[in-house]
Length: 71
Image 1 (cartoon, one colour):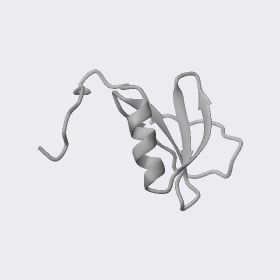
Image 2 (tube, helix red, strand yellow; image 1 turned 60 degrees about the horizontal axis):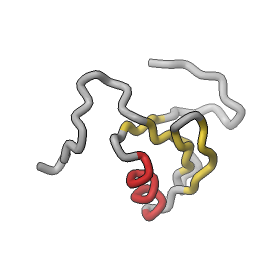
Image 3 (cartoon, rainbow, N blue to C red; image 1 turned 30 degrees about the horizontal axis):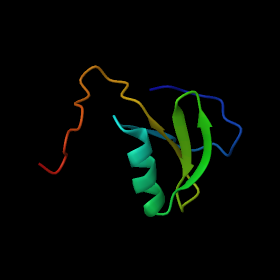
């Protein structure tokens, strides 16, 4: 768990790990997310609910590249 000071209203903040940030951002925008910012290699999005989250490069050593969760 990481605690961060943020400029926006305090709430739970999720990071979504992906090996293809651009494709994941496009997918999430098609579902209604809005891009807020691009910062140091990650993208901050806001869900239709107003919750902000980031799309980031893999952070965990056990991340599987191009893993299909539906397989």
